[in-house]
Image (cartoon, rainbow, N blue to C red; front, top):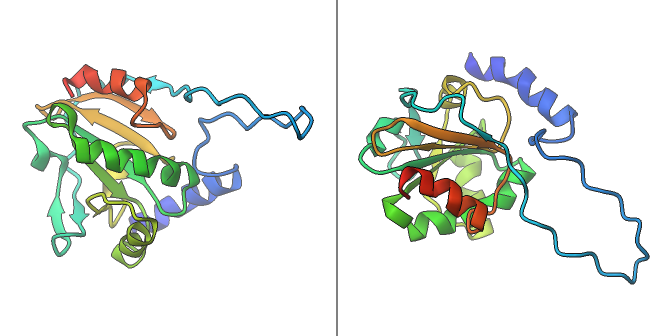
Length: 192
């Protein structure tokens, strides 16, 4: 049932140019072809602190590496956790996923990275996608989009940082280089 309710939102997102409405349109090339463009600065992402201090929702999601065992954000309590909602069809999601996987592997300050796919077909598409792309990240899946709905989100990617007590610190919409200075400064807010 919840998939049907989310379908119009997903169709609207695709119709408006993708899954990341927060990012401004790319500028049109105006320089001659032989002039190399300047290096792009790190993207500016808006940090939303409207939910700061709220407890993590109890909505379940699946651990695809553990026979679809049910998990909640509370299962990660005790260390800061970065929850990232993404999908295989979302270009900005795919763009940030390798740096998110690297962040999870390095685990600064005990940070736990929980990347939860919103793909409707679950393991059938998520596991082959991660394997084909060579992205080593623990696979989770939001089968009924329950977590996305409980968080009140409608666009992807979105990342929410929870502190060790399971309280929200901030959330951002849009892709981010998780190995960059902006990400490090944001993660420091939860002791990560």
